[in-house]
Image: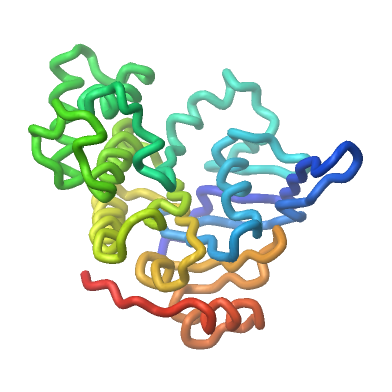
Length: 262
């Protein structure tokens, strides 16, 4: 595995108000390094801070304190204009494929939207060619371009979401519970797709899940979170064969394992 660090959290803390006076700390003085080309999975129960950490990395919210280092640059305090070039390089695949796609737009326009926003194609012909290329990459037919989201299954909608996320050739893909809304058989198909795209495109992938069986299948390393902190981080095999932390052992005992076929 390449040990060039692509993304780091340094003493990262984020809290939210819970009433007029108190605040709940959701990410608590967290330190984390992610390597270029790896799939690093964040796993833990709901409320442990996984999705908040993803939103911090996406700069959708700002930390209370600490630093986010992306490709060697502290992006935590950059203005929106200064951060814009980095925003292009970090894209997200969302949990619910249905709600993440505009029902009024055809698939062609959904996938083309980031291409237009970032001006990565010289004209409409090039945009159309790129859209068809992306549909092929996520194993959808060309005819899908002229349909609306409601005409697709959940797994197909997630493929569309993935095509949109990789359209502008990001360096880092954040998948926030991106298969949890899908049937188990469809989960396997999407996980295999993500593994293939990561390999072919040289992506780094931050994969967020509460399901350890899913995480085992896709991860190079696994980071176990509890109460806003990292309690264990190791390569996937070590986590499953010899978990060091009591909480990791609890998660392994509580969640049934599902074998995914390549």
